[in-house]
Length: 502
Image: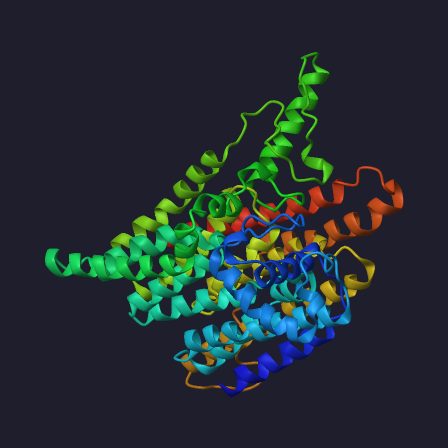
């Protein structure tokens, strides 16, 4: 535990240095949620429209904000002032909200500790570094501003109990996670199939008792979360806030997923059909306008609905569900969950680029299981981190994000090299003569070329485009980054699928 605390202390020191850095609109979103939950009765939380940043997370997160608002009021009452506090940017609110994210990361510390407490020391240290000092988490939570580390800590705790064979607690914790942030529901089919097969499939009588018992635990969690709103007849309002399907297929900044290729194909077809004389109407709501659309405006290809994306995600997850049913092994749970979140990221509706953390953090646990897993993680974690770069678009943050990614890459390379050199040395009876033992960690030629291409993409989008085109075609750098990173994420999805099927 000592080295984990040391890593956490280092991470906290870095986070403290990042306090004055850029803050996204999410900062005001969460400040407004503090004000809503503090100033209004529970019956008005999901109806308030004083600010455009309305409450749209499940009830447990609203209760969490209510808990934080008590301390916020003690620090500075204006933080929780619903009307006059809008866009409040005093040092008090900046320091308070930044520090709440750091403190809430204790759940991540606990999750990593419990997951790695039985792992051999070198692997344990490497996992701790990859998760606790994740550049993606630093960028998204401690610069851009969110609470992903807090929520992922709960997820890792759930996985740790499943790996220990304590399925009821694992299922209970996952239900808690869902009531904090519903976007984690992508892994729900994996949990359902695994728990049904591993925990409940024990004969008719005992199995039925276990189904009822496990179901009662999950229902109890949701009853605590949603019960007050059901009692007040507001559940429909809560659900409509949580699932605003009118926001459109893609976020303002395209997440690097399958729909990037679909959009580009549609635009390419429309361009060439117009060249050939066909009357193709281009919708006014353009995907390249940098705004969140209210529909899916395709000119040639079929329109995509939320139901279509749901079906595609479920279809993509199905091989994993079959595997979980046939061989419900606790040691594979983290791999299956990471795969499910990869599917949700690639094919889901209105996916945010930040959602890549949902699979890169669990994959850090998987990365130390084999040399091939380490090579895969090395690539996908770099791609995922780089895809987050456009979130920090101000100049003063540019050295920060570049340095974080470079340090992460070096630490990964050295860590994996040491891990697999060590394993080889153990097989050779601890021979440690200089030059006799060489690391087996070496990525393939194609992967090297692809990663070097990230450098070229960054040069074009960050330097060449502004120099030669200025403000013209402002969407092109984002489109280039999203498209190039989408190739890497698609590769990761295919790699994970093959790994699961073998």
